[in-house]
Structure formats: structure tokens, C-alpha cells
Image (cartoon, rainbow, N blue to C red; front, side, top):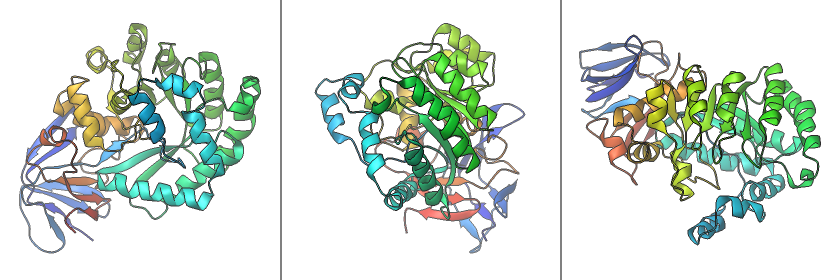
Length: 403
């Protein structure tokens, strides 16, 4: 068992009393089992210590919005967007989420589990130690349960912490296009009870958006999920301002995600609540759009802002949180210190985990990343390259890029 990380260079954490990110220099983080026990100004030696050799050390990333349970990639859509087609046009022609649904329904559960586990390997190696993982590409009881079982099995024995979300309300499946009310009743009466009773998810998400689920439909689905003990996260106000942010506040969701089209009224509602605004700039980038979520406006209003990858085969085929940070600095106009807060403690808050992960503090899990960098600014400054030197999860070294 490792005793900790010694010979730190610059290191970064969350100061709870000051409600601000805090920069440290040198010393040692001492572990006790899987948690951080204390910080010491001393430097130690021996095989039971990880020698950071003066490198920058950060908390592991908390990626609070991903879709890793997919069966096939969608590179043809990527090409079509490059030739001028929009995400909505591709979806209307049978692509988009509906394309992923067809592939997911056909794949064997063991094969899906294998694919997800390989994705977890890559995600962990890029510095993410806590991950939210959604279903949502099955849209039948059988295939949604298959997706959640595959996520669960892929996570078993894996070093990354995985928190599962049921997203049966990701789209209205083709077979219910003329009877969406029937599908919503299946969600409420069959899918949510089955998921909850099998303990396959902690959260329920709904794609609350024009052309997908209305405010009234989202409220109905979310209330049903809450009655079974599931916490709520919402896709909200991504392309059109429909009032999704206000609904997230009304139903006491943990987070409202996307928010590129959030209204001023939505921002005011979020500011008066504990709902986290989880922004997904990778999606805006990958879809070639120019409407970025108003991060600065949200923060100035007093909203807690998190950044997440939205890793998925259609609208952001990337899980690199450092790249998301780069986008946050360039296009969301956040400072490097603000993006660090957004991908660590604020990401944890978006999952209700802010008391245990997302900070290098005593009592928090010993989830750390040692970087081939000198300071916190260099992580979002470099892009297109993995600057991770080593990943420590729950006090154990789980990934070393030089081995």
C-alpha cells in the first residue's frame, strides 16, 4: 500500500472555507488506506512513496456527463456535418441517436461490456477517476437493462469509479413516433421500476428539448424516477430555450446540462438554487456550432458551473478532459483556475459527491494525477497530447504513461 505522493511540485485543491481553488507548492500528500490523510511540508523517500519529482499534481477529473454504452461509431455523420448537414438534419434522416439505437439493440451484452471496459481504460489513462455513465441507446426495456448491466459489469474490478444513469428518455424510438404517450407510459410504468428494483442506476436523465421531450413530459418522467429513489439530471436548453433550466430547479435536479440556449430567466432560476450548470463545450465544437454556453454569464450570476466531456459517438467522440478545459478557456472565456474547479469539485457536486471526490483534501478519496507539467495552466494550454505522467486511484497507482 502506498503511503502517499512526495516531492510535489505545484499542486491544486479546493479550499472549502474560502470556497476557492488553492495552489500549493512542494511537500507530501499522505494517504491512509484509500483516502488522503494529511499534507506535510516534509519530503520522504522509499518504495512506498510515489516521487512526483517536482511535477504538478491535481485531483483526478470528475466527468459528470458521458454516454459510453454505444455499440457502433458514427463517423459517416461526422463526414456529413463537414459537408454542411446539421445534427438535426442527420437525425431527421434516420441518423443520430436513432442510428445508435439500431446498433445497440443488435449487439451481444458481453461484447458491449468489452467495448465499455476498453473505453474505461482509455478514460482512466487520460486522468478521469470518477465517471458518470448513461444508458440511452436502447430505448426498450430489454436493451436499456442490457446497457446498464454492461456498464455495471465493465465497472466491476475496474479502477475508475462509475456512477450509472438511466436515460431511456434519450429519444422517442421509431416504433412510437405516432404514439409517444405510450412510450412515456412504458418509461414510467415499466422501465424506471425495473431499473430501480434491479439497482442498476443512481440517476435518471431526460433529454428535455424541442423535438424530443417537452417540459410536461420531462416533469412526468422525472417525478416517476424520483418516486423510485433516483436522482435527476437533465439535458436542458441545448438548441432551443424551452425552460429546461427552470424545470431542473423546480424538480430539484442535481444538474442541468448543455445550456447553450439557456434564457436569462433560466440563469436567474439556477442562481437561486443548488442545481449545477454542467456545460459541454466539446459538443459545440464537434458539431461545428458557434453558440457556446454562456459560462461567464452563469458564473457572474452565482451559478455553480461544471464542465464535462459528453463523450458519445454522435456529438462528441472525445473523453479528454484536458481538451474540454482548453475549450473552456478559449470559447467559454474561463480562466485556467476556473476550469480546474469546473472539472473537479464542481463536477463532483453535479453528481452529489462533493464531500468525497474532486479535491486533494483530508478525508477525500486519494484520487490524484501527476502531470508532465510544471503548473496548472499548462494542462489546458497543451492540447492534442496526453500530459498525464501517472494516475493514482484510491491510493493506488493505476496508470503510468512511462511503463
